[in-house]
Length: 233
Image (tube, rainbow, N blue to C red; front, side, top):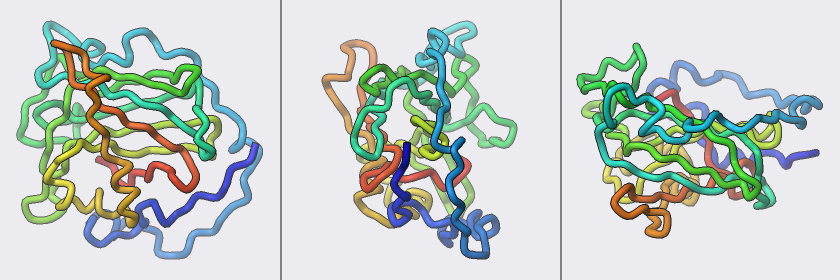
């Protein structure tokens, strides 16, 4: 198995001055490309995720329903030749409806939800499809600059068919006015790449009386690859 080189023009640069933390952690020297080892072109393989892990409205429930708007997030995972990637692990994590993560570093003055874990996982089916039921995350302040707020978003982590296809990215929601103001979103140099990070509302994914549906396809490599995440939140 071989993979085409990544097109780094569609991914965020390591140093983007508008995103302040990259100024300190970006490499100061040009990166040295390494020849891919055999291990990078094999595996990993994953068994089916435990039942219920893809339902974030239930996997963290203690004594009631999580608060917020229920949504369905579903789509396909594709390789660089637009072929479905079956049996690959898809993980997500997110803030709750109030814009708060369950993490000791997150001290944002917003309530935690005792019935919402904010993380889930599933394995794609034979057609590369995944599906999550979750709560729409809230925006939150992040102190990158004056009055800075992150748009509503969900983090995704995927391995694909091999370690060489590893991808961590973020999914955004259509119509969010914070897109134009967010340095992390705008660090992606390709406008079309930014658009590929915005999920599409789909009525056919929406379940009556239950949850609105959003479609988010993920391409692991190649010309139409989903841009990588360049950040920690």
